[in-house]
Image 1 (cartoon, helix red, strand yellow):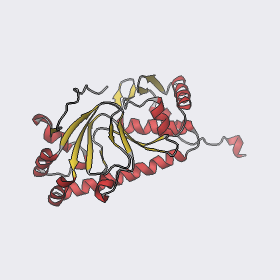
Image 2: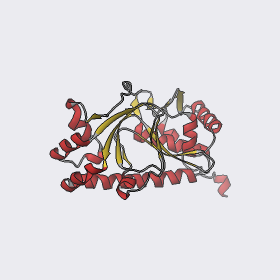
Image 3: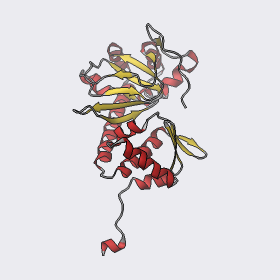
Image 4: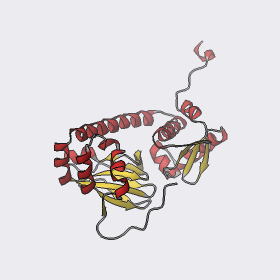
Length: 255
């Protein structure tokens, strides 16, 4: 589980990080690895840290985008609402993810809503802080471009997942991807602690909660996973990955 976050305080959010972990924390964020020492110092001064509780909305679809966010702890789901009000989850983001880059630089509104699925800490970088940072740090510009390319690749992967017809394969693929990106290695398997409920997994897969619960039960019976409260232990990751692949026709069927 993620470490507890103190109660949210009113007023201005705190600035930067605790002194002992400042440079290390920023340098470990993929988007900022190209920053030199001076750039890291500037980022520490400009970044605002904020704590949010599970269920809090970070931003809503349609609001003006004037900040970039970086997750330093916890998980955030990014979703859109259909015309009938159903959620469709596009991404589940975690520590180290930098997001809202595209709408920020295009000066558009948020195309999605972001909601915390666990207790979360984020960094907020406002619009006026970016021109001097980008102008003096070519490495930061490369990092931003890389993050945008990775998000585009993630979107292509998501489209591939939702185009798969079988719910079993879609769910196995999403769990496998979460294990690869967010899983915590344990002796007994890979732990997923993203805080997603069965309803939220259903929004990721594009199906009903009951179907997700039934499919997860099947995975558990097959020894692929062990279920817990808002956490899931993947006991057989290769087996789960195999379950995400199309079934090959038998030799008899090919004759």
